[in-house]
Length: 300
Length: 106
Image (cartoon, rainbow over all chains, first blue to last red; front, side, top):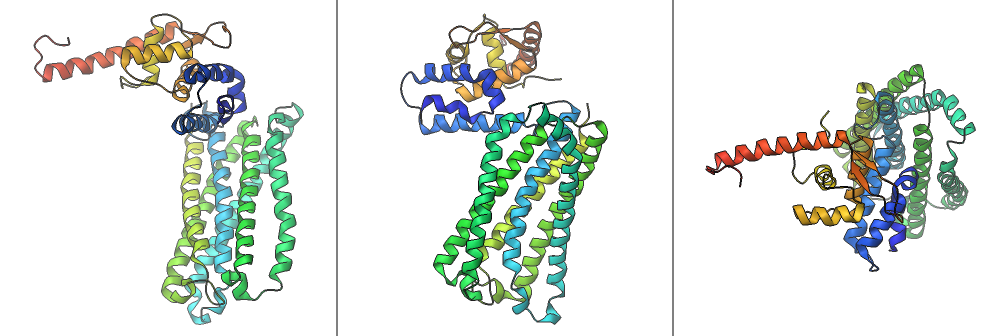
């Protein structure tokens, strides 16, 4: 790791103010030698913490309006994880009908409906929140305040484009495979599908990072901020419903159709997507609830 | 609002203590703190604390000298340091008394 590259862990605005000083300090500190892994990790940790702090996603920094906006943006960031968890859950649940007798499906179906309802409610709240913030985002764009987000937007666009294009190829391939082959029996397909899932995750993360960046540059009116607080709470409750539904569905399926969760094949699923869905949705729900509470409780 | 913690090793307290002896830039601060407190602050920790202290108006930047910017203590920083040291002194005095140190703090 080159010494001069270390300040890049910090956000751009911070680097503009302190970057030269930090670079000079690092040069003085390491005096020509390469920093060790521990030194790099310490600077990376401090830089990432500064990124989170400068986005007002966590902590007590800023005035009430900034903390309320930051809390709402925390919910938005958590919602990206909920989206991925929902996709992983959908993959796990897609063949449940063939493994469970209709008379025994009721409980699992209720849990499934809770996941879907939580997802729809949260998504609507996020979209309405985006619509509420759109006029302010437009003003920020006109004023050139989103210029530094261009690299982030470019990365997100490329990731979305590549994911969308590769989906066509993957769907064409999947059309020629059996259910069992699509669910782990074909190693090559499984590897490509996992790679595509990682690509989609990166695309969602990229879009989320861009959206959070835009939200952080919006000066919302008091009315808009009040609406964002409410919408953040609704989205957080949606995320919590998704997490609760995923866990309930898992518990019920383990009880009603243990074979379904025993492994990949025509009548079962690989456990990894479900473990991922439960873990990710649970963590996202906790973060979203924290963000919603921080937004709701922000007072000067 | 409490701006510094009661921990003697709080980076903010250490930086303010160091700047109480006069303006210093980052590397000079690190060396001074290591010398008087035996604590080595890494560049990330040091600049994280400098950022907070400057935001709180406890320190202020001086003109840059070949990319190295010295910082000085502001009157608010002097007051915050005095508060913090008084807290620490009270705790130290209580500890000394309970240990039965007849002469108090050495």
